[in-house]
Every structure is written in C-alpha cells, then in structure tokens.
Image (spheres, rainbow, N blue to C red):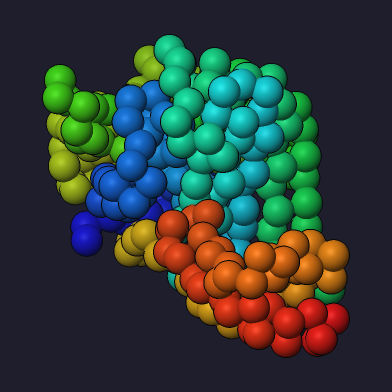
Length: 285
Ligand SMILES: [Zn+2]
C-alpha cells in the first residue's frame, strides 16, 4: 500500500493544504463492489473526498462520514473515514450508468457527519451544488464550517477501464491569511490544477506535486499519513445494527425458518444468522 495523506502549510502558516493519493484504496473498492465506468469514478471521488475530510479530525477515535442522497440513478453514496487513515464506502446502486458523476448522483443532499466522541455527532447538511463531489465539499466548508476552502478531486482510467489515478486536494484559509496570499492562491488555482494529472506526472514525490499545485505559496510538508481501505464490520456489529431495526422487522427474518443472510454494504461480506439467533436478538430488544 502506498496511499498517502499529506498535510502541508504555506511558508507563513496561513494556508493549510492536504493532498491525498488514493490509487490502491480506490482499486480495492472498485474490485470489492465490482464497479465499472462512471459508477467506479463516483465511488472513487467519494472515497477521496471523505479522506480529505478526515484530515480535519483531531482525535484517534474520530470518524467522519460523507453521505450523498441523490435522485440520479446511483441514488447516493456513503463513505466513511477514520482519523487513523482507514476508508470505506459504497454506492447505493452499483449498477448505475451515466455520462458524469453529477448525472449519476442527480439533485440531492450532502451530509457530513463527524463522530467526535461526544454524545451527539456533529452534522452539516446542504443541497448538492453540482453533484461532482469536490465542488460540494468546497460548498460544505463555506456554508457549514465557515472556512474558505478549495477542494479538487481527480480520477483517471486508462483506455481499458483500469484505474490509474485517484487523488485530491483540500486547501483551507486560516483566519489571519493576508490578502496578498489569497491573491497568489487565486492565481495558482485559476490554472485548474488536476490532482490526478499531478500524481500521474510526479508519482509519490509529494514535494514536486505541491510545488506544482501551488507554485506561489512555498509549501512545506508537515506530515505524511498512510491511507488504506478497511471495513471494520463484524458479526457483533451487525447484531447491534439488527437490534436497532425493531422487533417487527426482525420477525420478517424468521418467518420462513431459514437462515437469514445479512450483507455488509461497505465490503459485501456475508453474515448468516439462524432463526434461533434472530429470536435471541428479538428477546434482547
Ligand atoms: Zn464490511
């Protein structure tokens, strides 16, 4: 695994820059979910997006989820990342086809949920701007967290449909940023740098990537973190989820007397429950 999340700063510490390279994580997700074409691109963008969001988490147990519910054929996407660098996600309808990610997701809502170990998770929600995900994350930070930001996500396939690049950046301005730095940043970003092109050109040389991304800012790398695909599902966690769906719904699992098969949405792992096990879960409600 060579996927990385890079944290960097401008020379004067007034601009925070996060860059992530997610090729292996996204390849694993595409293979696990059997995705092709634009459906594969949609999930990859969601995974890169949630990894970028995870850079704002502070504590080891913190978790962030990027949930899009859309009226397009994909119906939505759920992606989750931890502060420790694990990422997982799925497309509601993996069979969906279309021309663009925005078309696949359609009109809808973006929800960002951060579980920070408090009683209630922090939640921000807004209508999709374009459904292309990067622009929606930029809008989320502006509207829900009042942080001026710029998010870019790039996913590339070769002519045979194999994923060759999945990367993204999140640039955020700190309150004390001087105007001349904003001007320089705007000039740099007006070139519409593509994160996918940058990793295709410079590989994992993140210094060169960041210099090319923001040539005016004299960017300094602060930290590199590994990122990888990981689903933490278990029979125990599925049981806890089943208990929350209620007695009547659980009853439906045991009416035919056969084993119930529950599939994890994130990784497609199958869990079998005997009628007796379902009955025991019902008794615990
Ligand atoms: Zn799973």
